[in-house]
Image 1 (tube, rainbow, N blue to C red):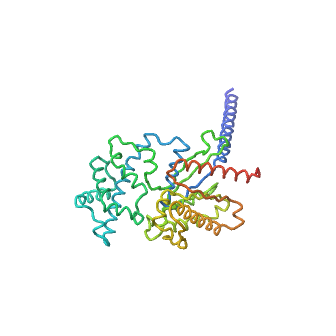
Image 2 (cartoon, rainbow, N blue to C red):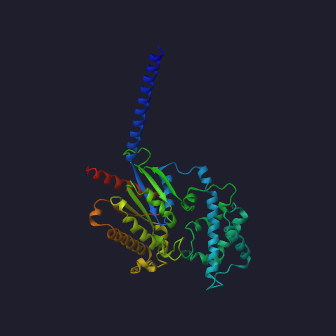
Image 3 (cartoon, rainbow, N blue to C red):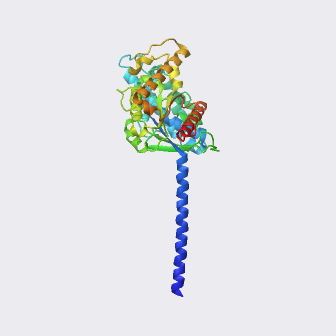
Length: 382
């Protein structure tokens, strides 16, 4: 009887194992099917091109946004950005005063404050902002020498968030300060490693089942070696190029122009064999800053754009210069992509400002329409 009982128990155990194995196989199959519906997007570009801001906008526009707890976590980042911005401008005074000492010398009453904030800026961890520190930063920010330094920001590694935070320094120093959504978008933290998120530009209903997994990786040179691990199975590359950086140099190499670096990087990515049939979506980003700069700083300051000749001024010149840059990137795409390869992938150019919610929302919905259409064409359904 014992042997019979043991055999029956063993048979029942085998049945349970078989059922469990089938259930596991079923779940794996379901997961594989779901994975096939997730379109992989790779967000690439040189450092300071605005990739991280676009990544944060995805959370704001197509996910749950930033709750108060997450916003509070940005407080120290915002404070650090303010300290770093004023320190960079102070460092600029030392550099620029070699040629024009009087113009780039602080007012006597601000010299001690300048020394104090330079020391704070040099620390690996800055203190929380207080009203007293805010008053001192405000005094420096209004100093004619600092404003003269700010006018030459393109020669410094000054973050784009500088004026946003320095113009509102007293709000940032309030004891109950919680960063706003705009503060979080402006806050600058250098991307290290790889971050990813999933979203649907058509909303939570995902009526078409189109779900995207977006990967963002650091754009600085020392981060790019990590890119290669993400190249397989990419539906589209979103490449960010900062329009406004035609007269600026790299953070990691101040002898290299940022726009030239972007050109060379875009060309290298286009020629990567893994992307032979991958769609390319070029975001010409920071149009808002470009719009303010183009009538003050000639576009032909950049070697790549040396043959550009302004035809007009004002808003007409903004659009003329933008059209020229767009054409240069389109020509680079055609030069770097064999004619037969152009048939297998999509190439679209979008004018973007990463801080503009409505524009980014419209852009990603256009991206969604383009990629859906391409998938249908690949499936011979169009």
